[in-house]
Image (spheres, rainbow, N blue to C red):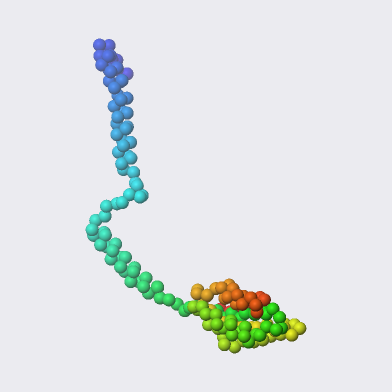
Length: 164
């Protein structure tokens, strides 16, 4: 270790005292520079015009190919057969069937034929079918519309449900 001349001791002490201040200033400057260099994922990055044009060209190509994917496939349809049970043997099933056939909904096509099947003690149930488009018609909505004929209809059940 070097020996320091005692006459220069106050100057050396002053430099040692000032050195931490200078180091602190340098460290603060480095931290500020590091903060400015940090990646901000939400910041807009400046793009040049060529990159923007290339991006737009690629988007047009994707849009052209997407049109071919947008073709509509076959419509999903189902055949549903309902059992409509009347309140009693006095209910006119032909008139009830005529009322049910008047229910119109977009995507609902009634079968023109219906059956009367015996339940018990002279009471018959009405078996009637329809073809529905699955995306347009809900079976619950059709059942609700049939049960709106409260004077004639006791209950409505689905006998069969088949996809086309």
